[in-house]
Length: 388
Image (cartoon, rainbow, N blue to C red; front, side):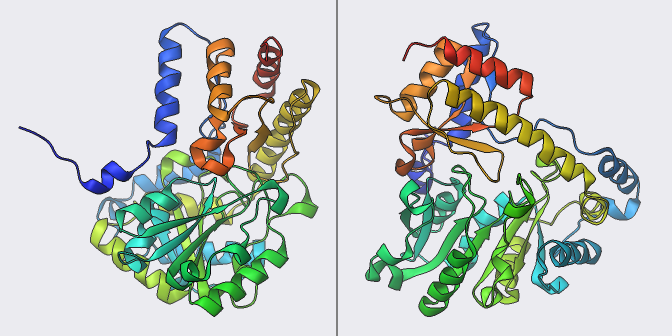
């Protein structure tokens, strides 16, 4: 019997990290000692107090049934309290919806608000799911280049008027994956004016807000700025902050009507987030944040080791203020794809090609700071032996 895939699946680009993982496995089978700086998956364990909370929550029979709905009230209150402490943003529980990781919500928001032919404004290079959700809903992607000359911010002024007129949704992501850029307050103010004027929903992806390297550079929340809650929502996650990528727990917060739309989609697609995970997330958000501070110190040591090492080898690298990524220009005369192949074949190093996350990323590679300093120093040693 012939199997015919949906046409939308055929339109999808290969999911970048699946391709990288395939190449990595092939190299391991050849006996290579791979050092992977590819996928942004924290290597540090989930803090012990969160694990203990989960163990206790799993034993409760009440948590063994369908969770349903927008999430436990205790979880949504914990998110609201965390936002007040961290960003001085006031949220009510009905302005928060639990997600099975922020990726799920980012993919589902399109189903609530995008009709065939509607334009979605997408930063590129960027997280592939912004575009995936657009394809699945027959939306039209319009890619906004993130260029170094613009501080890796989208230039809202150059988007054609006919595109703006059809646009219903705009994604932004700061601290940014993959460029590690942080958006200034002026950008958020301009974005809110742009969205209000053109009746466009803002979907802010803030998954990396807690990975920063200097108290003076603490990233802002989109929701901190006047008018934000009237035009948009913010997606967040416990994945990167608390090393909980496999737990699949996040949230979306902000405009309650947009939240209601996402919640309605979820009611018809899934049965909510396992309540035991939500209870553990309450512990993570409401307990001491020393574990997050400790993780930041570790990432800072790794960042400094990688950036200093690459610079000594002649690579052009800016020092990231946030996220656990380093966005590096490739050696002259090479494309992103050529460099990752050379690094894998000649040095058993895995990283992400910039052009795999959007054509504006060509000429860059992304390194994830997800191995220890000793392995990072080994990365530098291996790269130093490559003839460019």
